[in-house]
Image (cartoon, rainbow, N blue to C red; front, side, top):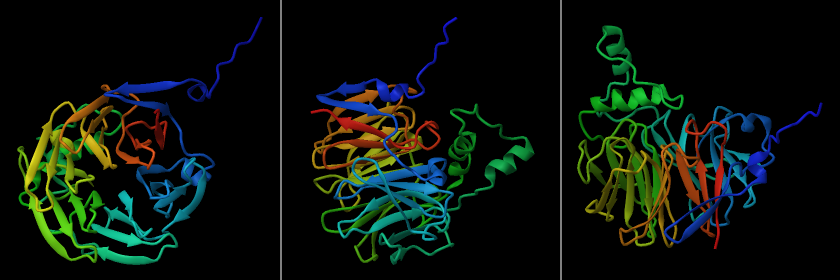
Length: 340
């Protein structure tokens, strides 16, 4: 009798490509290499790239909120011990600092790679008053008025939040109530998507002064339900994902609506821009590529494809990095390597 064995590294020994709209990517299931054991089994909430093409993972549950990888994916170091209680998304500034959202304290924290805090936006531990009832789901379940939806991809708690607590938000609030993401424009202004407990986008000066707030609850251009991600394109246009309305809004720097896309986005969860494109990933398995002229360049993936992700990053070469969290539990950092 002959014993046959399957290769457990099958994904490393085959080539998967996604192509559309003149763009082509090679799918690399596991980009990060040499991770310490505590990181290897940790939850990666999101990630970002710096101007040197290093890749950073936002990690929960190990004390350090940031893991740095070199441009080839090799582990470099842990960053920011104790700076963040519950991370969501982060970015690297042109000053080589890190800005990260802290869901636990409803703040944005900027810190250096050696962990020194530069500034904190928001009032730590004091979320703004939006009227949201974070206990609505439990209350209604115990009263027999609400039943859990069909669990999908092992995220019933997140689904419950989307379908219950979010709808108790009564008004747009000040910064912040569990902010989700941020982006910096060419002038240094900081835009924050304030979305898990609020329905707003806030604009700050680089030194942390609040300049403007816009948004509000609604299902129309300029109004939100779940403001989950934000980016700024090469023309300083502000792109915002409303994950649970399945929509993307585009604004100028003053909050005026310039463009709007709704439907067939796969619950847009992460968005990032480079000089040419804006890349939007949906946790349903969709990747949609726009240009700054508000045109859809490419639509890659399909429902429940390998492109399911919570966050997205891009480097100077146009390589994309997907951070699945619970959307694809087998992987922490997927690379879509741009094929020229």
